[in-house]
Image 1 (tube, rainbow, N blue to C red):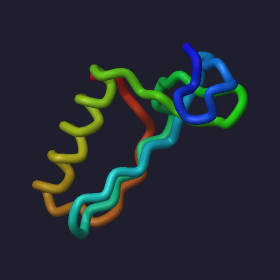
Image 2 (image 1 turned 135 degrees about the vertical axis):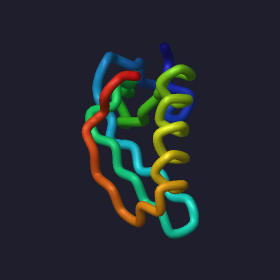
Image 3 (image 1 turned 90 degrees about the vertical axis):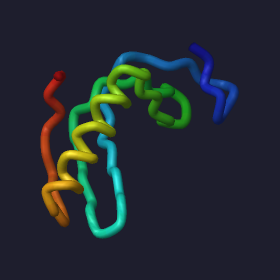
Length: 75
């Protein structure tokens, strides 16, 4: 797909590191499958993956986690 940020690059399969913050909770998830722009590096994560990441973050926040770094694991 054509990058909507730089308007010049196209995206390729790659991995992203996603940081989610909610209140006092910070979660970093490495190795998330994404489409990455070859020109500017913008990362696009699909809807199903995003939903899983948000559920994971919600669970961590509910458990009282302050900072967590984890490797992506598909649900």
